[in-house]
Image (cartoon, rainbow, N blue to C red; front, top):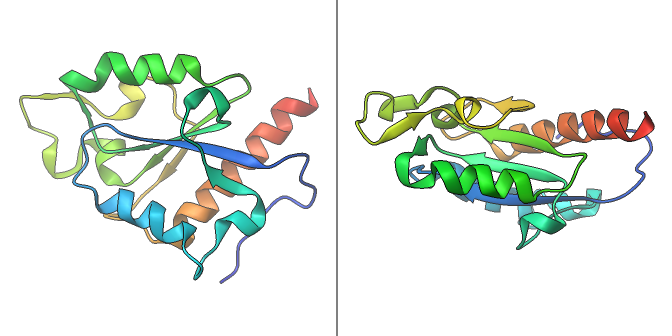
Length: 144
């Protein structure tokens, strides 16, 4: 498995995961990236239980009407600099749910998105690569 992570790590990257209405396929793949097979914690990437401790927001699924204000609130709670990663096709386009009466739309209609990880569901390798891209963005922002 080849993962292109930044050469210098200024700090660990902590991620907060929020499900905005997905089928849970992407959620399971995020958890698979944490298992000993992929072990993202060796790179300093870990899930946290509060958005106030996070650097990255991992969003899965299209945004439902019930989750719209909650997604905005969670986004505002993540301290700056922050990155938003959309995991899976549903969060990017609405996926198979795109014509549902209960959807507000894809995530980028609600909050700004930095990295899209396509797939239904995406493989753990793709999720790790997407987090590495967000990491590079955050390091550029911190350097300014």
